[in-house]
Amino acid sequence: MKRFQHYLLSLLALTLGLASCSKDKEYQRVIPSDASVVVALELESLAKKADVTSKENKLLREKLVSSMGSTDEEEKFFKETMESPSKTGLDLTSPVYGFSSPRVSWALVARVKDEAKVKDFLSKLYSFDGDTKHEIKEEDGIFFSISPSSSEAHRERYEQDPDLPVEEQDTTTYEVPADISICAFSKKAFITLHTEEGTIAAAKKLIKEYLTQGEDKSFVRSSYFRDLEAQGGDIRAFISPTRLAKTEGLSMPPLLEALGKNPRYGKIDMEKISALFSLSFEKGEISGKMVYTSEDKDQIKYMKELSEKVSPEAISGALIKYLPAQAYVTGAAHVDLQAVLNHYTSNSEFAKLLEEAKTEGIDLAGIVTTLGRELACSFSKVDVASNDYGFVAYLQTKDASLVDLVSRKISESVKKKGAEGSEYPSTKLVDEGNHCYEVSIPYSPSIYFGYRDGVSYFTISKDMKSKILQPVSEDFSKHRDYAQLKGTHAFSLIDFKTIFNTSPTQDMIQMFIGEESMKHLRKLQSLSFSSNGFETELHLKLDTKDNALKTLLGIMSALN
Image 1 (cartoon, helix red, strand yellow):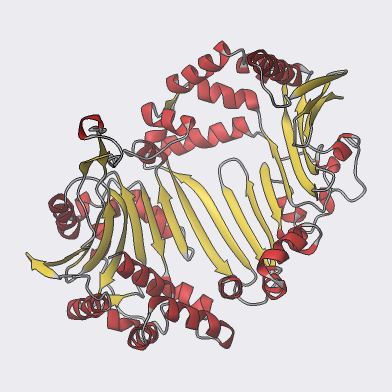
Image 2 (image 1 turned 90 degrees about the vertical axis):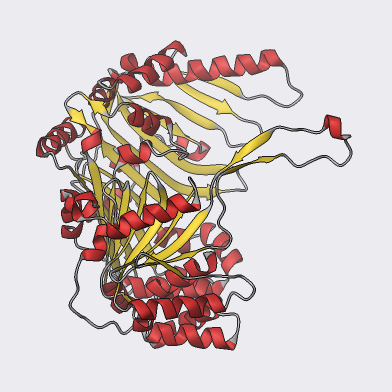
């Protein structure tokens, strides 16, 4: 089954020569109403933009066919299928959907055009698996194929130690989650899913529910689905943070874990708020967008009000003049941290986290009152020989409270480790006076931080430390992408042109991938994220007149 899933994903990515046809939307009802993530792929559009049949992508086609087939017969089959995707029996001109839910790790859903062809296609695929026995069985009008490697949840004993007698062996057991993969299809819809809970019988029952459920039990009925479709773009996605936070067995950071326990922040109920993403592949650029959505319009109103409080203004540029135009990574934001703290403390679970921090000597409520609204950072240098790295961060502050708190906590940590005793050199904190500090770390670059003229700074570069708060002649406002970022409330930019065209980064990368691959990689120019507080945009720029997807495939082909 895992091999089949690899085949299917590869074929979806390489669908060629697609033809339009009339479609019903019944297959979309398979997506359950409790889906925490839903992704829509416009394969017809992606295939055209990828231009996989082009002369430039010949090597990529050959590599993909070769990776899917280990014999001449298999390679011939996959090549023919790519050239005539209708042989799969699936209508790949309709969007293909992926989703996850509390009961499903992941699933793919496609529209069935010809049920008999789907069965023939799967049978042929399975015939390539040699001794692995796959069966396609029909039950109540639905065809099922269960992966032979699927296993239900069970308990296992730890491996026995051959050097110990029986009476001394560890007899404890541990829980092994389910590992169930199933393909199924009806006259209207195809689904392949994976779950890590329950039994195979339960998974089959769930699939039957999905394939036969009405619109009232489907994600399609919600306004989220309509908003998702209205996003446009070649790839679209819906994510519910609170549903994700409540997913069993999914590891969560503390903030998201707290969100799962209590989704309310004053008037804002995160249970009712989700996010929509869209990604479009255009000439020389990939553009993306993220917006919040809700079936309760008041919640969107509250979210917009919050964004205006948290980031009331665009970045002023007061700190931009200290950042060089040529850097690997640059970022800046205008944030009212007092408003951020007020928002989080309105949630009982986050309030507990803040209280826990206070018992550790970190009074965020007190510190926030001393902070300004502008922050900026830059990473512009790598000097391995001198152990010097040009990272610097600035934050507007009213006084030195923040840096003094940091120095105090570091001092406490150093003293604690010193009292414990160690044969290795220890970290040292050096007070340079006037609220300026150096942290000397054995075998690592020193860290410098401090406060000066209304700004707190942090850097891991001795050279940068000597130039703190000194305007640079070619600052970031001169960067080729700054016009697009200017006027936003927050942004971050990765400058691939600098990374791939200046030493020592270009030399280190070329050492691993070779000069020819490096030429292709240099087509990547920059990746930026920017936000106005409520909406976030993504832009990946490439040095090409072709569609960005076609160029990316060429880069991938050169790197593999």
